[in-house]
Image (cartoon, rainbow, N blue to C red):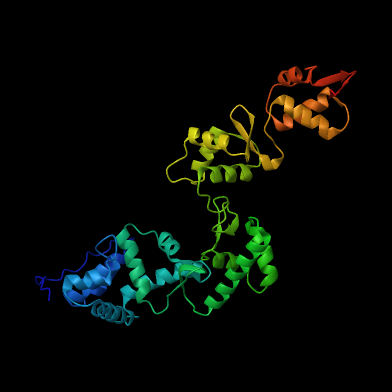
Length: 355
């Protein structure tokens, strides 16, 4: 068995007025444990390191089994949980409960820690440690339904899971992204007894129904929610902005909405735009979506399609207006093509296709 040097316990530094530290509070409560038990808890929860250690690694260090490590930790957590009236435990527990209640009684673990404003990884780990010790805070997680979250009432879990399932059904039935108001309208029609704010809080812990970077709801595996490649990100930017954009502007928007971890390079974006038939060049470096009715081709090709669709001769201004909807070019460029007698015939004020 591992034998470490006996160390004299030193009380953690006092917290100055106006500050609060979960880590300092944890150390105060661990002072009552044996050296080994306290160190095992610190290792497991990452109170002295950036990441908590596995049961196996801790067991190897102390030459004990994983099960024995688990028992020591369970006993330590139980002992701390019994200190309900201890000032330090009460303060930490209340801070966490307040954060959960502010979010309608449930909050993702990562969001709770972010809201509490921790100062270091160890401080964040100390928050998790106290949540684990509390008898008033319950950790919930269910693969495919709920992300890891904290609740203050187990009675909420059934209602949360029901709402999330209804949200999934709604998203799949619609097949399109939904705004907050659209999702709320549909879910309130199904669960009218649930307040709007509660619905949004419940949805925040869903694993498969998520908001994209533009605040629209959909399924996590949809391209519009989790775009993987550059082309998917470009498509999402154009679809959201609903107008043709220059490739450099598209690259800037990809970065602005944090769709790419490494940052978008304008030339890379341009290369992907050129390769994909979903994108149509409508001006110098300006692209639109083919699904908006744009199509590739020269100005001459565009004029031909316009006149064919019209089914009648058209005036110069009419042709120009239609071409400018499809391409960002000078009017003189349109006129040069329109006056090409090889393809178009002018009859008075009107133009038609040459037979």
